[in-house]
Image (cartoon, rainbow, N blue to C red; front, side):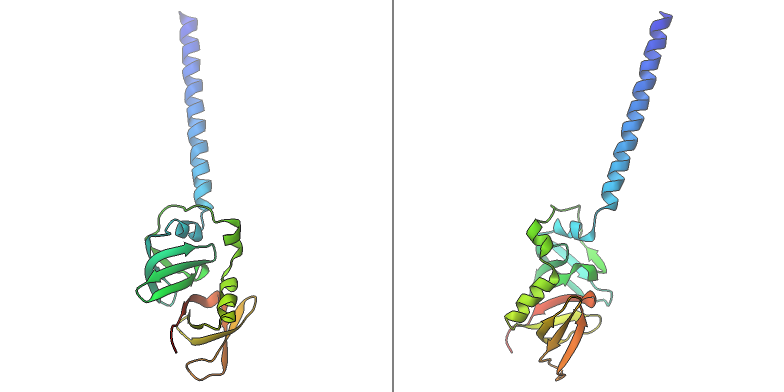
Length: 174
């Protein structure tokens, strides 16, 4: 009987050690997953749902998420659609867990791709950049900035850093 008790005790100890090891591994994997989650991953979970976003300069947009991309988010509100640059988001309300991974094509379609298409179509836009909101046409899109022309202010052109762009809205009628 003594040997059976010793063996049973060893089995219990081994099972407890295995359980601790598994729990530690699960916790470690969960933490590793959390630290790899980007803001864009959580925004992707909001397609079809409402979100409120703010820039560092306190410009806010709220509406339904139409499409989410690692570089941008398309929001629809009462006024229409607004393209928001994900890196320029300072505050987000209404986030949930992680959304589905974007497709290969979606990850390749950055903000500059959309801006170049708007430029080719000669669409008039309002760009929220810092505390400014210039309205005009996109004249050129470069690697890290764009030129705006035909501005409502009468200035011939301005250059806008893409890192500073919070959002772009197509302005209807002029």
